[in-house]
Length: 208
Image (cartoon, rainbow, N blue to C red; front, side, top):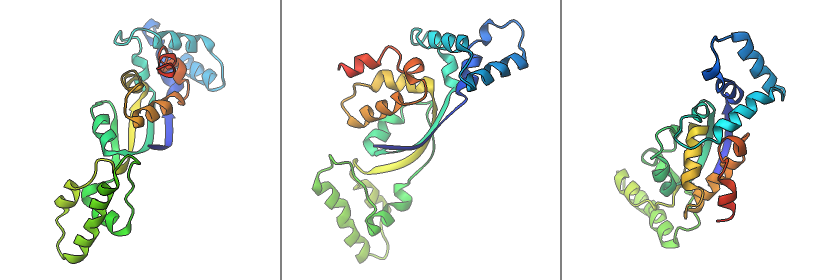
């Protein structure tokens, strides 16, 4: 697995918004000042409140502000991982590589990349289809797709948020699939992840 071009948006704005439930009258200037202070490393009280809310019981609703902290990234992973990842409904696949559109070209140019767990005969099966392509004017792209090993790696750009990443981390941090372990390790490196996402879980994962 490889994750590149990751970006985090609205971190401080969402932390400031975590205090809105206790505000009787919204003041735009005060809200802006809080965000500005956090941008410069100040306003500890807002950060402490956010950390307390993030430590609340999952499903309690207190962590909802985490849904406003958006994360976008490119991830290269196997079809096995992608099938499992797509169960998460608050993770939007912005755009992805297409087997149907480009698998023939990938075979012809030798651009296929496989997970190191794919047996050689699996790779050879797909690479042998290059001969099939050479001998046929009309290529059945369905045959190419259906004979593609699940270990083929594809890249997509994803947009999600800290709340969904918390759900993923809780469920997948000790998964048997190494790609999930790699993904959870990447989550741990996000800004304030130890206080907002992985709180209460990192020690358990490291000792597993």
